[in-house]
Image (cartoon, rainbow, N blue to C red; front, top):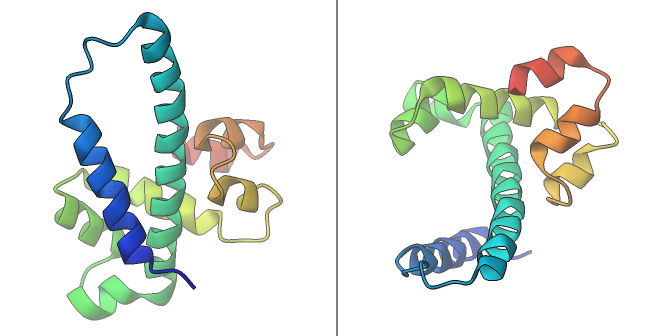
Length: 129
C-alpha cells in the first residue's frame, strides 16, 4: 500500500508551485490545454475528497474524536461553507455503494457532474447540483 499522506503532500506542493507562477505569458493554445487538464485534475481531487470524507463519515471518526459531524468538522478545518462540506459528504456516502459508476468516478476517469448527469436517479443528481 502507498503512503496517502505523502502523495497528498506532493500534490499540494506541486499545486502551490504552479499557483505561484505567472501564467499570463501562456499562448491561447497552452491556456486551453491547461484548462482542460486542470478541470480533469479538479474532478479527480473532488472524487478523492469525497471518498475520504465518506470513509470518515462511515466510521464515525469526527463524531468520536471531535464531537461533531464530518461535514461540520470539514467546514471548520477548511474554513469553508458547511453546506458545501455536507454535500461532499452526502455524495461521497451515496457513492460508496455497489453502483456501476462508482469505480469510474473514484478513479477520476470522468468528471463528477457528467457522471451524475448520466444517472437516471434525479434524487441523487439533485442533491449534488
